[in-house]
Structure formats: C-alpha cells, structure tokens
Image 1 (cartoon, rainbow, N blue to C red):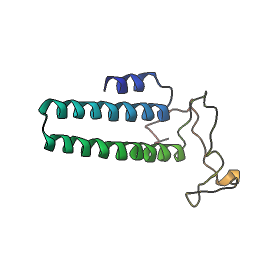
Image 2: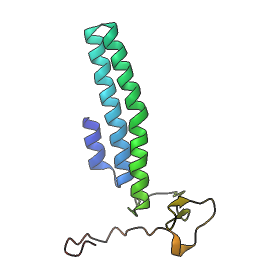
Image 3: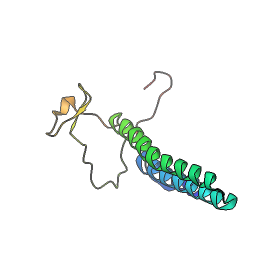
Image 4: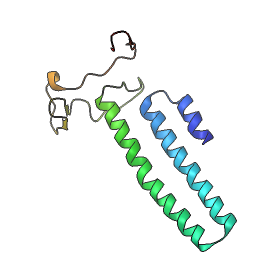
Amino acid sequence: MFLAGVGILRMPDLFLRMSSTAKAGTLGAGLTLTGAALYFDEFSIYTRAIAIIFFLLITAPVATHMIGRAAYFDGIPLWKGTVQDDLHGHYRRSTHTLETGIVPPEDAIETIEETDEFNPQDGT
C-alpha cells in the first residue's frame, strides 16, 4: 500500500497514477491475503484467500480501465511526455462511440488544457 501512495505522489498524470495505485493495491492485498493463509494453515482459509485474490485480479484492472476511459473521454489531459495516444481523433462525441476512422474535429473530444483552472463561482 505504501507503493500506491508513492505512485500517487510521483506519477505525472491521472492515468499513470491510476495504473500504479491499482497494481500496487492489488499486489499489497494479494500478498497480505497470502500471508494470512500461510499463517492460519487451513484449507478453508487457503480457498477463501485464493478466491479473493482471483476476484481482485479480475476486478481491479477492469475498474481502473473504466475510470481511466471515462476520464479520457471527459478531456483530462495526458502527461506532456506521452508518446502515443491511440484514441486521439477516434471518439465521436455526439454518439459516444469509438470509430475506426478519423472523426471530424467538430465532433471529437476537446482536451482540457493543464493551464485551465476550475472556477467554483461559475462551475467552469
């Protein structure tokens, strides 16, 4: 769990932070459950720990992916050092679908600039 906290502090953008915390959180919980199963040394504890670890390995990446996808489509900016953006120009805002071809610029998503600030007075 310590590594998840370090990931939040050290990673430059939302997407990398989410990736590091999901991986570190899953690893930390899995190792804790493995330690508990080894400590109690009972078959029922082993099966429960394995089932929970399996559940974590299945659900954590899917949840992180869905949150990251929603953030991307909402216009959260990528890190300036991002080399490749495979989704740029393929999301059609009017129908909320991904297209194989390039979407016209007037129907594509607009990325929020990092210099923009939230103004609580007018909600923008």
